[in-house]
Image 1 (spheres, rainbow, N blue to C red):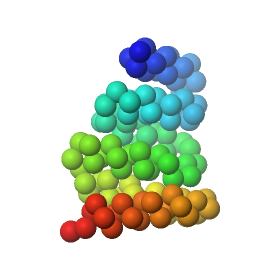
Image 2: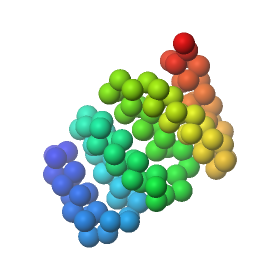
Image 3: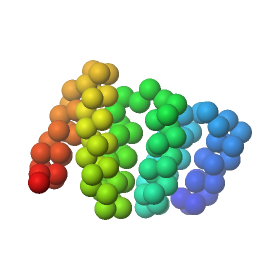
Length: 106
């Protein structure tokens, strides 16, 4: 079922390439399928076009952790803190801070 949902989102994106909701949906489907490089690629495109409030940065950080790129994950969490704070989401920002403090201590 996941592959057909990925195909569905890809077709939607082909007909409306700037639809950020579809971009985010495609990233979620890649995440469900464990296709983390594609999660990162999709979210990178999404973040170039969307005014994300922080959630995409957490998803991206998780994907970077899954592929073993902890430095990029750290940067994504840090950016997520900035964006979540700017958009008035202090609990999301705090979740990202706690993750950095507990899972990224050197």
